[in-house]
Length: 171
Image (cartoon, rainbow, N blue to C red):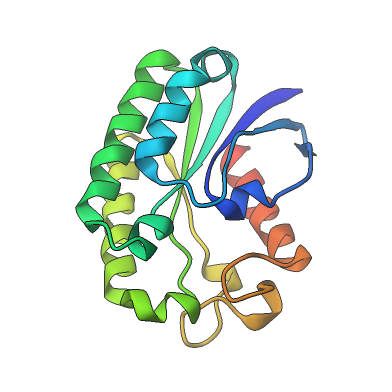
């Protein structure tokens, strides 16, 4: 099986499957983690990253919850992408957008929109895939209630769409 590392926050850490299609998942995600800690984690698991076929990176929402500067998300993600790209030039990198939800309304949706625009720029700059979430959005551009258990985290059906989107990007 091919190796896929999940590196991100609770949406990934709550994903409990050990494989997805032909991909064995190595899930090092943690609830509440931010991109700066993700960079530190990547350095700790450098051997696994060096031997893996792909990595999914998902950060940004916790920084906004913690009222950190939105620019810091992009700064640390850029450093993370450089680190992984130099460590393993053949690894497939998938970068996830931030999901728009009713819960994120208090974070000012324009901040999430700005971060997502910057993530698109990073995906082009590093020539990597971008995981988007439109398939789980309702007509208001936010995650539909049927795909979330609490306004943020995914239901079984939400994870099924996540899996399908991710597998399309990896294959």
